[in-house]
Length: 173
Image 1: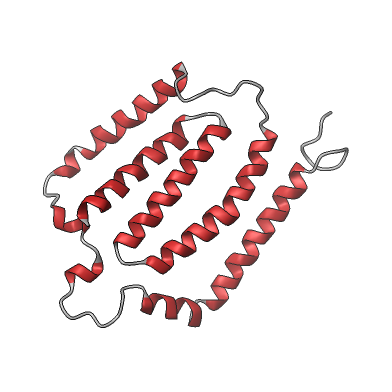
Image 2: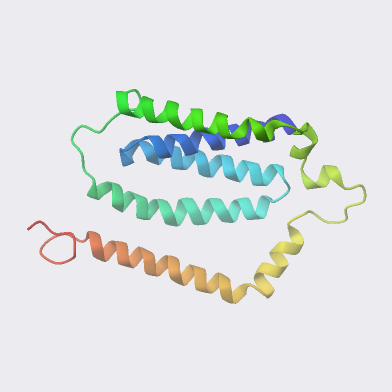
């Protein structure tokens, strides 16, 4: 189980570098999907399957819709690919920065820090995220509705900005 958790962590870092290093939104979308999937896998391995499902549905269902409209605005005839010169330079620079900043933090890292919640406790009655789900729907219900309203509002604002023809902010002059 700890091997899968470490694999999810490495995939998360690789996906983040893929998003940050590629200037073309077409290829960075794949990095966003990888980051979301690896983050969900990391949450599942630490004992939060419900929260990973919420992350996957909200992030990929809502934010990638907004990202698709943004990518439609940046219609490049020849986008830069994964193996073009600047993208490789950015990727190597980001990986070098990650390695240099993580070397001092590797001291004292142990493999048991990647164990899920259910493997650490001896007499657990319920799963780790059951109490959090109950609190989210009882005490956090108003915040959940507020967040859904803000996502809908953000989607409508992006739709209004990207609407073509003669109206909207981003029109051809």
